[in-house]
Length: 236
Image 1 (tube, rainbow, N blue to C red):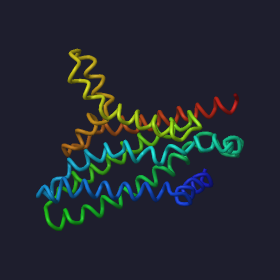
Image 2 (image 1 turned 180 degrees about the horizontal axis):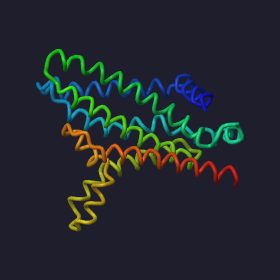
Image 3 (image 1 turned 30 degrees about the horizontal axis):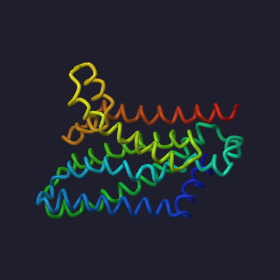
Image 4 (image 1 turned 30 degrees about the vertical axis):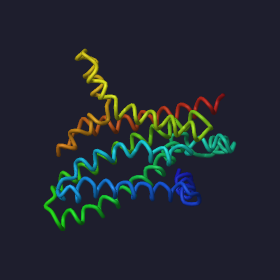
């Protein structure tokens, strides 16, 4: 598992993917931070910045997940991995952790850097800030697991990227459908599975344990489904 994790991490930086991800994320997040905190004249207000970061995932998450498994199928190296002395779960988790490390490391470093001017020129609520950072990391983990799963379904990286983009958009905007639905039961269900609705508690400064369970469960579900895809392909 460790060998596969190292191999995946190395692949991000022996190709342009890792550098493009870091550059795009830092550029976009810096712009949003300046737009919604410093230029707004409210250096201690950052909830809107974190809310918009969720929508940045539509573009950046597919960058690091689209090739995670689909490339193995395209290059015909998948059988080498499937026959390696590593469990299928270990293979999937290693690929997930590599993508999550790239995302999480970049996001945490950016969050620390952005917090410095907030603390220097304003009076930010540190607990609220940390809470928001944790929420974004949890949401990112779920999206990455979903992207890895979609990547396992096709050998075309472009299709994997488009599928991940569509899935992220659906989960982020599904609560918008509530404005057009009269059934309270359906509205409740849509709110329960919407990422935006689940994040709203964190945005208000409340550590929502049910949202933590939701994001963690969704991450575990997609990793489990990816393992099942591998199992089916191994014996096909």
